[in-house]
Length: 211
Image 1 (cartoon, rainbow, N blue to C red):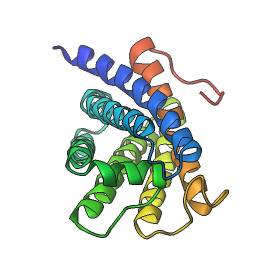
Image 2: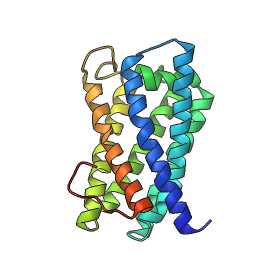
Image 3: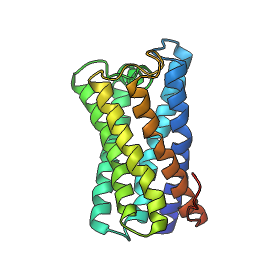
Image 4: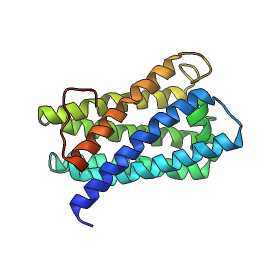
């Protein structure tokens, strides 16, 4: 597989993550703390799909960041790989805890699995922030891509920490709680992922619009 092929795969994987994220967000509001096995199985499929796509995006998009700053790109690659692979491993190690994190909005306990769930999500968020910062240090066109990754990644970190310490309410249960706003801020990464896909697959730099 050539470097260009890997980059294109990373771009398509980024688009897949951009599709999965809003579906997960809506599920957290429509089925808060659900026990319906059909819903839970659907959420698990989305989780696995999103995590596998994230791993592919992390590996593929390393080719986007490398030419700008090789040393920082390697750090971002390692952080993203550890976070995404750990997320997938924790999902299979503790299905109940992972579903509670996605739908219920809180870590079920402060045990090793709970810590790993939060750590994995923070590492994935740092991958977004790190990649965004690399792009922010480049041209105006790259800044238009990178800013949404930094803001969205920060929102993801806040939501992961808030879920761990049970701060900010529960998505879909407590109305428009503080944690809901953290989740909304985290969705800014969708803009980033779509713009990255347009760049690496279609060669199109972002215009002045939202996407």
